[in-house]
Length: 285
Image (cartoon, rainbow, N blue to C red; front, top):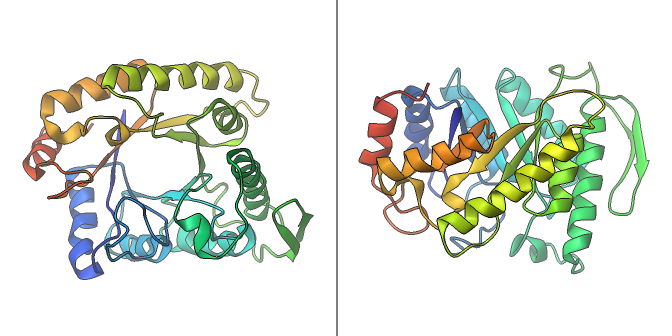
């Protein structure tokens, strides 16, 4: 099992920088931040941009993976994103992890775009992800899609690495199948549930869908599985015992990675820092 931690981009860099450095010192395998213009969980908070934050984090760390959790088409175009991803991946020396998701409110309305249905959001994400993947691998890409157009996008000098991992988000069957067929990984927050057992039962159903679909994958690559365990009805850092229980359940379902959130003093993700430090002190493996 690999362990990740998400640091919300709500504070100025002088306050956030020590958290990224501490995450690496603690032994986390990857650290993440959210990609939003405004996040519904803290709509009145200050908020900083994801990719510049990851660039800054790359400059103050050396080993830990750096992840976008998750980028959506709500306010991004795959061509401009491809160039930014190339650049951050180069600065981070191949440590960048790119999560991609369908997106939600309030980001979806900030640019004045037409309303889209849930099905259209998934359609748009799939077109977005496939086109981004092409532009990170191929030169002279042109495409005319239902949502995105690009003409002769250049990949000057070739890809920075053999492959920049694209980790596709999905909580519903259609998105899970897409991740199984096309992603380097699948990340899920699970579906809404009233208690922990129901939440894990929903996650387990999607794991079965992933297994069935990935078995027919032509390239033979293994799809890594990332579970955001704090997206459940319980915060995993309430106690060491709860954390161990949730990680154990995730492992039984075949997850390769779990993600927790840096403890905050208020909701969301309210928890005690000493629980996180105690977990890290015994070793993250």
